[in-house]
View (tube, helix red, strand yellow):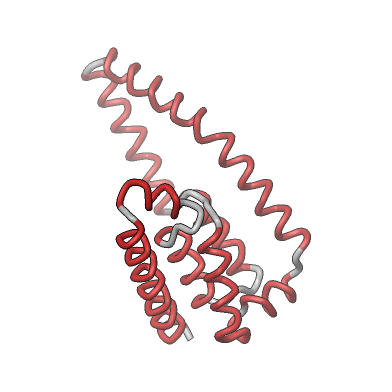
Amino acid sequence: MFTVILYSSALLLLAFSFFRDREKTKSALKKTWRSFENILPSMLSILLLIGLILSVLDEKTISRMIGTQSGALGIIIAAVIGCITLLPGYVAIPLAASLVQAGAGYAQIAIFISTLMMVGVATFPLEVNYFGRKFAFRRNALSLAVAIISACLIGVIME
């Protein structure tokens, strides 16, 4: 029901905008379409990646590696994968949802998403160039600490 309300509101506001100023609305729709075209290849590749991961790894394997019962080892595995992976947020969230549905634990997914967004092993050299080694190391270490704390809290709350 919420989705219907959301889409209906968007269409009504689009119609209002169109009647208010047709040229600005057309320009905005063209910009939106270009943005969509830029995002589409990434989205399709990620959907392919998610499908591939879920077809290769069955629910038992995912649950054993990063499920609720995997404990600290599962959290470490998810953290390492999150730290070294470079994915945008709009790709990581659907991947995380698919992993949860396949049996991954909430704490493990929380640390995966947190480290994915905050800890940058892949971007560390670039960060060192702009901010210096000391700052980059401290920021990544603090981000990892926050990710561990938040994952533990989510694990306790969701259990």
